[in-house]
Length: 165
Image 1 (cartoon, helix red, strand yellow):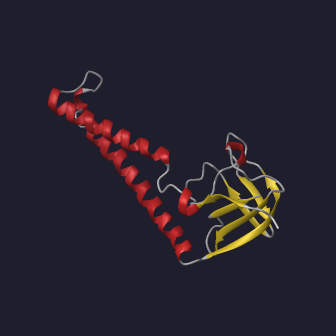
Image 2 (cartoon, helix red, strand yellow):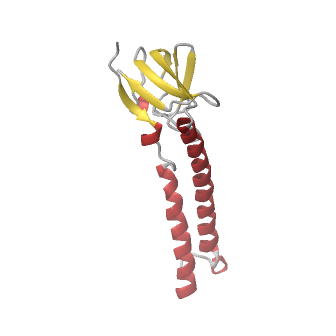
Image 3 (cartoon, helix red, strand yellow):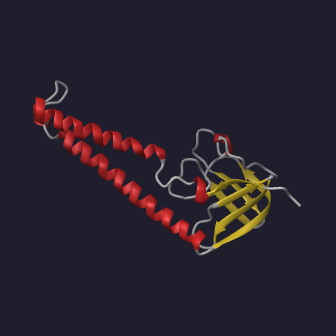
């Protein structure tokens, strides 16, 4: 019998919107402030006279990109939450085999097998909800580690819940 502890649980640990996406809010605020500064005091010295609406366009563009990212992520989060609510997941338990670590610089994925199921992940993959923390960036998966993984019964195989020795 293996004594396991929870390392990751989607319901607790998953951020709906990646933290680095919030920089777009700062860009939008900068654009809108620049626009209102231009209206109130005239164009700042670093803006061309014909660039009166640059700040407005810049702010709207940054805000739209953020809203698209937030909407997409919220939809994905809702779908995965539904997996838990409807219990549409399987559980596999065993030793990590055929482990291939992700290099610290990225440009590859971390891959491994548990039983007859293959998992692939990367810290740079924002498109998948679930555990994406490669060992090269502080993740816990390594060769021969005993794990219990919950994964969806349909779609891409993602780690929704991870327990390790």
